[in-house]
Image (cartoon, rainbow, N blue to C red; front, side):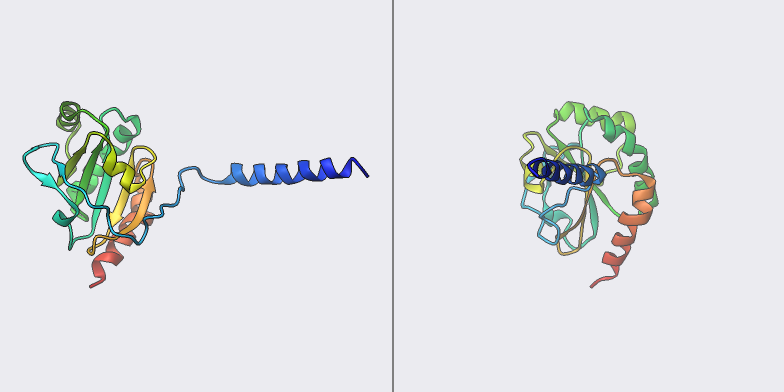
Length: 175
């Protein structure tokens, strides 16, 4: 009888471990879904005399892609973003996260620039306000400035076609 309690506790722990291991660590829910994009005023990477704010994209459905020149996964997703930009299905805005301005500019110059505009978030405060856990992360923002989706990790062609673009299409049809 006294061995049944430790055995029961052990079995419960094994069940919780199995459940935890079956979860996708990239599916981190965002508490900001359905909430307004946090307010920010950031200099643009390409021209620091210009400013990127949520008001600059209000009235349009956009992707906000958080990236950095030091991010290996950002390099992996970059061709997907370049292709999407050429297709002109949705405007892509960037948030250059915890980077150096010159490094961000050089990176875009070397690999191509899919962004309509990219804000420079040197200290990462805007990223923190968005609940960014790491780069890359991509947000779908609706016409009213509400965050409607958060994609953690590199955007893949599959994620674009199955999740992101269908949501963009639906949001573009809303008044």
